Amino acid sequence: AQKITQTQPGMFVQEKEAVTLDCTYDTSDPSYGLFWYKQPSSGEMIFLIYQGSYDQQNATEGRYSLNFQKARKSANLVISASQLGDSAMYFCAMSVKAAGNKLTFGGGTRVLVKP
Amino acid sequence: NAGVMQNPRHLVRRRGQEARLRCSPMKGHSHVYWYRQLPEEGLKFMVYLQKENIIDESGMPKERFSAEFPKEGPSILRIQQVVRGDSAAYFCASSPPLAGGVTGELFFGEGSRLTVL
Image (tube, chains in turn yellow, blue):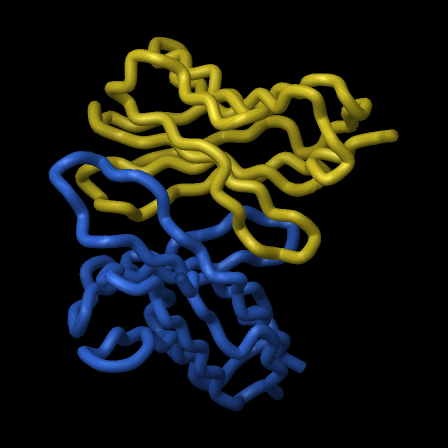
C-alpha cells in the first residue's frame, strides 16, 4: 500500500519569501509519480507539478519546484517569491504504476502568506 | 476546451434521501475517478471507472454507495439513504487512456459539496 505524509499542518510565510512544504512517501513499487495540488478557499484542486520516479532532474514549473530525494523518499515542494494568492491548502499525492492513475493524498499543509 | 464538469456544485439532502452527483470528463478522457474530501482532510480515493466498467472500487463504502460510467452520458456517484457523515466534498477527476508508463496529471472537477441535514 502507498502512503503519503505531510507533517506540517500549517505555516506562515512572508510575502516574497520562499517556502518549502514537506512530503514523504512510501511505496514498494519502483514506478510511481509524485504530484502537488493547490486547493484555494474556493475549493477547486489545481495541479501544480509532477515528478516521475525515473526522472533524473527535479521538476520545475514557474515558481514551483520539486525537491525530489529518492533515497529519502521525499518530494518537497518549494514555492519561490511567495505571493498573497499562494495562500491555500497544498496536497502532495502519489500514484503507482500498478494502480493506474489512482492517487493517494497526504493530509495537506495550509499556507498563509503575510503581506 | 471544457474541463471536467461536475454538477450540482452544491447539494442539500435530508437524512434518508438519495444524492446523485454527476461528472462529465474532459473530451477524449475515458477514465474517471471519484474522491471524497471530509472537512480539513485530504482527498480519499473512492472508485475508478472506465466506460461501462468499474476498475477499482476499493475505496467505496460497502453499502449505500454506487458508481457508474455508462457508454453514453456522465459518470454518476449515487448515495442512497444519506446520513450526516456523508457530508463532504466529492471530487471527480478524469484522465486519458493510460500509456505504458506511470502517467501524469489527473484533471479534477470543481467538486460537489453535499450537505446532509
